Length: 262
Image 1 (cartoon, rainbow, N blue to C red):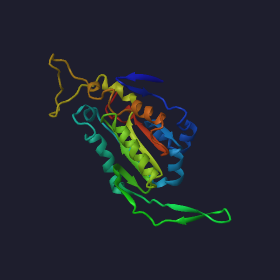
Image 2 (image 1 turned 90 degrees about the vertical axis):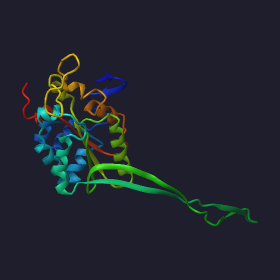
Image 3 (image 1 turned 120 degrees about the vertical axis):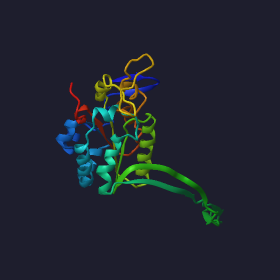
Image 4 (image 1 turned 120 degrees about the horizontal axis):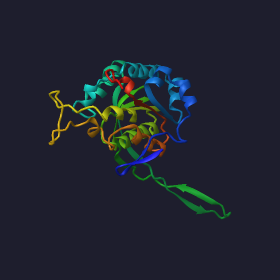
């Protein structure tokens, strides 16, 4: 399914680039599959299960413990709210560290001349090496919030959707440089929209926020179409913007909202 959201495209389902659900189900626990929307690209789930079982276990433990309330959702704050900070509490003690890579590109230029021998054959002569060309900071500024061994993880709750481009490019660069083998991204499922549509926004003091006409502001005004949610992410993954980096995605559902009742 594809639809318009502002000027950006949105896709609510993975395409042929994603792994089939049978493969995902074999590698991700049934409890997590019940709690979250789970999508795997380039066999990320299988790589984690078979090559990094301890890291996958820690991620699944964090996802199992993760809980939010309606107050958490309605309170001010974007990606710096109490919601994403939970993953720091769960993962930092297990040595998941914020990691940045930086590197210079060194270019060596080699030349050789050719001499035609009396026999008609060519003889090559290596010329003196030229000074190397160094492009400083060719790789720089690529940061991932959580990295352990060769597994990367980021969580996007309510940033501008362009943040996904930064995340996927960082995953791709870390992968191409041989720093990681697989990446994980946790974000909001579109299924949370049913909560956003009827839950009032709160001020910093905890009271309900009203507009100038005296109407309650709703969370859907805060969690807009151009913020980080699954439809924006799948559009990018379906387009292959993760490059060769395997990516596993978890979408946060209403099942983790402790005080939500339909």
